[in-house]
Amino acid sequence: WPDSGALFMFPTSGGGGSMSPYVLVCTTIIYALVLSQCCILMNVYVRPGLLRLLLMIPLISLHLTLPPVMVDRNENVITLAIMSALISWWCSFKLIAFAWDRGAITQAIRLKYPTIAIAMLLVLPVTPVFQQRDVEDTRSKNSQKTSSQATVTSYAWRFITKIALLLATVHAITAYQLPDIVAHFLMAWGLYALLGGLMDGLSCVCLLVDGRVKLVPHFDQPYLSESLEIFWAKRWNRFAAGQLRSIVFDPLIDNCAVAPPDANDRVARFRRRQRAGLFRVAVATICTFAMSGIMHELVFYHLTGAISSGAGWFLFFSLNGVLVLVERAMWSRTAWYTNLPSYVRVAFTLALEVYVAELFFFKPVIQAGLDVAVIESVKETAASFVLV
Image: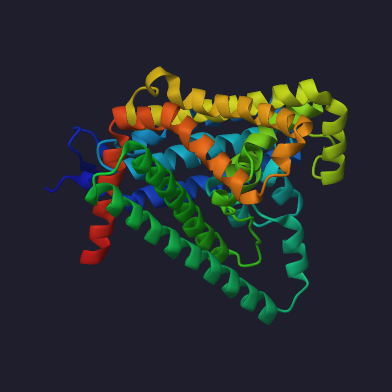
């Protein structure tokens, strides 16, 4: 008889096994649908706060350990990284935010989004614009269809361009003998292309399922950032920034885990930040970047079985928090810097970011062999599509 487990697992060089892509996707979809229904029921019967968080802890604990069980690290490092980020980090953060009556899941349930839409918000890295959806509901069906097609086309085009950029950077890194600083600069571009392509592709899926949803772009030309604060808060991986803001920055500024009634009011949030004072804002900023470092270390652990050497990834993000505070102080007291041409500030910001990444981010990647594993995974995936 054939091995009945072959449908669900296939062998790897490490002796373990991964779920087949089909089973992995189906399992994730079913789990997301069940989890979304649980959140809807919990919103009715359990008040936001400690009790709701305690009920979420078993699920969050499962999320933190699940990706390496589903995907073998010796087989496809990119797939494992995706599952680690989607499940262990972002889905867990969304559940914590929901327990505190914050975040996209809370708003979607209040606006009576269908279960499938809430399920997508739980497992996909998308940030909806809820006000836009309400406006769309008042339009004609033809107008909705046209708008949806235009948005899907836009995200599909972004996906294609970023994949092309990823392939170009991989080719340049592997085909030429480049100085380390140049190779790492290209790695940064490759990381941007990989993350951006992944998120744009998943956004297409979300929009194809429900075209009325309007999404916030994940990246907003980070290579044009004139400061580190703009880079991290407004241009680089805005989805992750929003998740960190919901469960770290905003609760510290509000001095309360559970969201106040006007939590989604931008003007109210700005006023609370002003009242919080410089010290609390500084503490909230450092804690937000430190939490980002912790979650990146978790992803690194899933990929390699150990934290980054010298906790380099944690130090990279924590140091960026310190640099953002230094930058704020410099901007408030040094008029000459703010008067510099924008291209000078952009060049300085990117050079500083690449230099810090050179010290703390790329070194652990190279020591663990993740750069080679990712490049080989990209090549294999590209070759499989060419063969098809």
